[in-house]
Length: 154
Length: 127
Image (cartoon, rainbow over all chains, first blue to last red; front, side, top):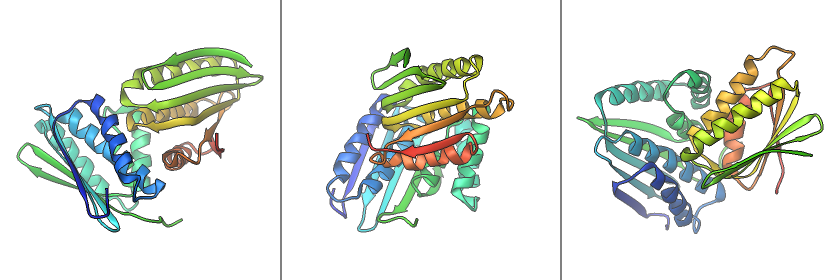
């Protein structure tokens, strides 16, 4: 993938497909990105797509990755049940209002053994250092995760 | 070193062994979500073994682990929380041996160490 390309995937996907997509994304980025960036983008792709697939009500999900000169945007879309949309909205609201994504992630970890929800979104925000935005349109949920590429502050 | 249990799914391989007073857990391959049940079983078994033998040190060698999904990371979180909840006389220390060439490990293990400070240490060593 060159520094202004995009990659898009739509269709019937299962959780078993997600590792294959992650590996494909790693391979695409290998030409132009640092190992650190590849690792962040691949992990975020895995977590966001796995969520989209798991919560899809019709078995379909879509993924789009856009890579610019110094920025990457990953977008997933799927249809979801009202209860899941509500939980996701609450999670996204808490995450975007958190002062420190890492502290939010650690709090998610503390609560996780007693909750059914996963750590995926918190992990993307804290470990991959991505800004997350949730857009709802009826029963369609779109997650947009954006990050700067290049050397990270120590 | 005494060999313990070995488990392997399509992508994740784990083994446990005893080296003197230390239990060693080795994970390699890829901890995809489909391996969650197997990983939970390994960590539960290890925890019970360590507690019943009053072992104070565990080495978790993940140098060969290429990736872990957040579901599998949650299995480690649950394990660490169980260790934190032990009383002082049973609580044990965990040393994660990480691989610097897998950059996800620095971030994910760093988060685990922040979560369970006082229980987890990380040692970075190329394989």
